[in-house]
Image 1: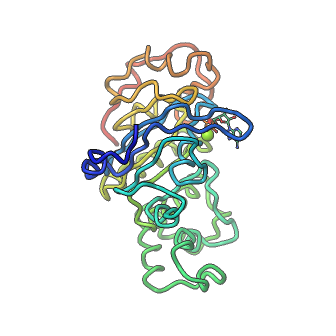
Image 2: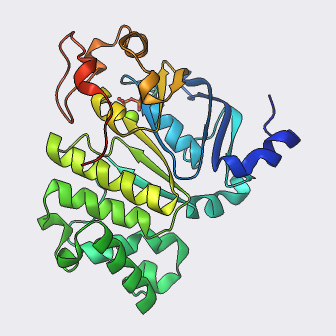
Length: 285
Ligand SMILES: Nc1ncnc2c1ncn2[C@@H]1O[C@H](COP(=O)(O)OP(=O)(O)OP(=O)(O)O)[C@@H](O)[C@H]1O
Ligand SMILES: [Mg+2]
């Protein structure tokens, strides 16, 4: 199917990100994405859930052109993502990483400002010299994640949860239309994981930023997602609201991958029991 079809473009105001029939086979022959299609609306929090090797990271990397799709296409904010407009596309996207990807000896403030490096000139890139208005924006973003008082602290001296909140602020300073988060809480303990996801969800809903968040933890997915996309072996097995997800769905996603199924925020591998009554989504604290 071609996403260039007129109806696709005409309908783009309903979604900000669209992946159409994406296929990715790596050069060594590994098929990572076999046929993936999904749409994300502004302000929507979509969790991609799936076992290790399902293709979650490849999907996010493909959206911003870090991997070149073998077939299929990505549309972002009404434009097809192509080599020619990658820089423009990336300006509309914020990224959050499992390992935070901060520079430890830089202050939290400069780490946040680094989120603007690809959009600013040489002075910023070489010497971290930013305009006053950029610095004010960075401070505002730190304030949004509750870290204004740590602005001048070296990132390496912050706790894991604080480091990831700096990571969130660094993504937000780009004023993204879409935020891509690859296992953003996998390195955090359960309570902190919960707090960080709450923060991302709340801020993005308020600012109408679409989120695709890769997670391993089923309980967190059920708790935070507006929609859950179940990816297994490079294919979308389900695309549903959390309240439509039952135990059978989860088992299908993780079939043959028991070790990849995680319960308890940031916790370890599950036993075989899924307690759906305790996993039901509820209001944010
Ligand atoms: N650069 C690469 N070259 C070859 N194969 C790759 C490459 N990157 C990923 N793969 C393979 O593609 C498949 C999908 O990998 P991917 O990293 O997207 O999975 P994932 O769902 O993110 O897994 P995890 O939960 O462990 O992070 C896997 O089989 C993986 O081994
Ligand atoms: Mg991954």
